Amino acid sequence: MRFARGQFGGISVCAQLFYREQGTQHRDARSRPPARLDVERIPAGEVAAGSEVQKKEAGGEDSNGSRRSGFVRRAWTRFRAAGIARERGTFHCHTVASDGHNTLEEMAAAAQELGLEYLGIAEHSKSSIQAHGIDALKLRSQISAIRKLNNKLDGFRVFSGVECDILRDGKLDFDDEILGELDFAVASIHSVFNLSEAEMTKRIIRAMENPFITILAHPTGRLLLKREPYAIDIPAVLEAAAETGTWIELNAAPKRLDLDWRWWPLAKEKDVKCVINPDAHRTERLQDLWFGIGIARKGWLTKVDVVNCLPLGKIQSALEAKRNKKA
Ligand SMILES: [Zn+2]
Ligand SMILES: [Zn+2]
Image (cartoon, rainbow, N blue to C red; front, side):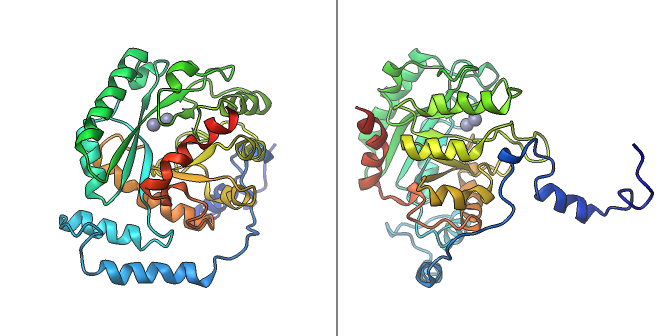
């Protein structure tokens, strides 16, 4: 079929980007984010809180009163001024144990320098060979390394986790026995992207039904400007998240920004919790949290929707809530 000249040939780059934004490249209606936002507005107090934090931070000291390098301090100032109140910690980061570039100790130190109170480490599991995924033996040795590190830390905690591959049929790459030894577990897809929407949705929901899976990571698998999201029924996944008590990740890596901001109002409506994770593979990338906060705001989320805003004293019981619910 040929189109008359001017019908499509003259379309501007801006218009093409617009159509892209509207989701015309997505495979089907149900993996396409809703085009229109229909959410309640953030109360004025929430917005004002951001400017208060900004004023306080202008002094250049953090809550511990310690001094930081100018760069980190500036990043943190912007970070805390972002209006989702204060982010206390994050999950889903990698170290040299899988495909990360920094050690456990370096990642923990960088998170502390950024003013966080806790950090969750989640290495790739054994099926992710390309990402140097680890087996049960290595995972157990990391659990004990984290325990030792925590004994030396004061006011900061590292949580043991794993980024467990969801296999083709929805089974997990680790069994419940080892998942139960962890503080949390992230489930994600890194292979077999070409299933039908029904199969992919079933596969993911099956993984979410496991009581030890705390977080569904990068839920559509998209890589911006590189790889389309796989076919998946996001409303059904959000429904399952609400039912099982699984947190949905807002992956803050700039190449992902997944789940897309357009879905968060629906997640909020279903009372599904968001967890902003940088998926950092090196210390500097912890600061990608900043992008995640921006996207969460764009999705009209506030601190009650984002579990990272829970302080260290409350995050532990939040992490245990799902497995206790099923017990
Ligand atoms: Zn991943
Ligand atoms: Zn990851």
